[in-house]
Image (cartoon, rainbow, N blue to C red; front, side, top):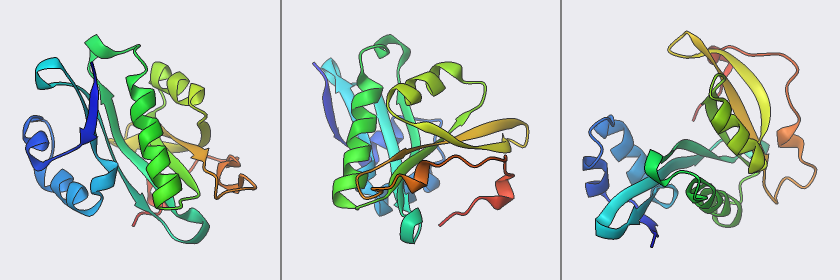
Length: 165
């Protein structure tokens, strides 16, 4: 049986690869966007981390990370975690869309996001470590009645053209 619950500070300590101060700041500022999926024996099956940012029609939920342990993949767990973040973005924060970045070479993830209704909004040149391109993928939420937020850009951009809050 899987339990999905909000992250606690102790959960961050279970993942040694995290930049603690960065994620602690995120967790403190956007606790609604941090969830962990646990199986029997409190075994971590997966997690999602995110935030809400932007202004005006750019107000959106953002998926910072979604991860499912290899042994728990193909069980719709990523879909459940993504749906949870989308619902919070839509119903609580009244965002226009949800976005995420994925490596252009990560075909399995891209296909999964497309199945969840995400489109490739734009390509960000050399987004990952100045080497690999990233894809900015988006899904419109109910507030974006005209779906303006998911009209793809026709040209790639560079990381310095991205807007951050």
